[in-house]
Length: 121
Image (tube, one colour):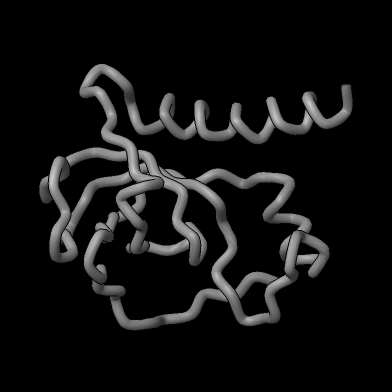
């Protein structure tokens, strides 16, 4: 069962950005995580979610090439079902202004679909 819980807004460490989430995917891996059968299963409570789009709201020390207010797509290691997530810059990608958050989120879901089809082949 998913529950809404309040928590302090995360602060990025060096080499990380904080992102205000606008879209997040619901992947099969999220279902598996809630069942406790995904990779090294996390014990509840945890924040599910593998990917998101949003806007950078804070920069950690040493972050170059990104700025506050920039739209990005990202793969947060600590879950994406949150209002604000912290993500290493290595898994954060700038979004072209011509790409909507909805379209970018769909592209992130494509990675999951492609991997499922490739594994089945």
